[in-house]
Length: 423
Image (cartoon, rainbow, N blue to C red; front, side):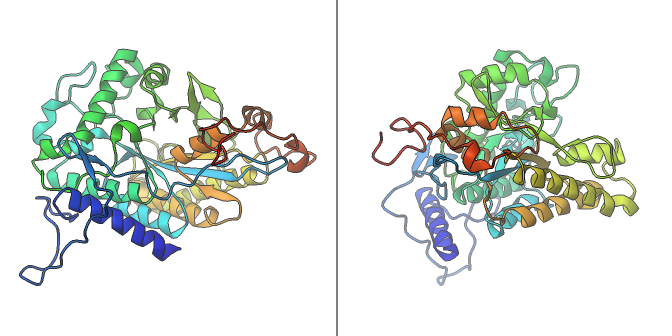
């Protein structure tokens, strides 16, 4: 099966490269890698399903995304799978190579993830004035912009991630938090403008970098983008109103307990959750940044002698949160992270160890948010309502067979989870 998946991904990569008349190398000029001279290997021919470039060729329609399982409805008395979502804010590839590292870890542990791309990571520094952030002057960004090599490397990781079944969401652009124009003060219309710009930078990275011969991203971002996490978890109220009008399907900008999700403003509320915090009397948000702040305060490079313990606290807290859901109500566990080496990289080590321990367990599905909402949309709403009656860590007293014994209503024809022939 592994070999088959690699061939499938390779075939699509070849199609993308051929469709753009270029290789998929990482050189800043967009040229493919390989030996020079007459012995240079020829690229594999594109399959008959030709790549259809979109706009300036920064993105392309290449057909259905590979490796997305078809969601199925729970049967009568069936125990729900244990979903775990690992997601990454501001996903981009830099000198730390954390994007590529966790792509590989995911593949090795039967996992897919969600990468929330910051749009300005595809906008070069010398074109910064193209970004016009709400309530700020043109060219302003609290996380900076990128150079052409960084854009090339990020695009390569985004391309491969999507072909492997991962999701590409958005973390918007300038990452403005707090007072003085922070996202918490933006109107619905300002959020719509920010979203439009985030899409535009993804759909025009070739024009903005001049790398017109590079391979495109193999998806239509207008259709791929169905969810987000707001900077610093601020501005959720007006963002969700804008997102609903723009056709988004979920938001993960809130804080919740480990219970089954419902909908708010027409979107699945897939808030991050509070999990145990070993050695403390309170629970902690399942995100590396929050563990860091409660361990080393305002510095991301605290006492090196404590790095190991701090990472172990995060790892064990996430594992304890996982276990109480796995043995209890089976609520999806939502985890957020950043590609950062805070406190010596201890949180990256912690996340890696959690992935390795949980994603290969029986009945566990480490999935993207897209896969989770596909599954939720496929379920009988009455079943989900019953699941939401279970409290944190609460398993059905009489067992799952009794708790979900009623036969669910059939899925309407054409929706996820319906039989192939429809009913």
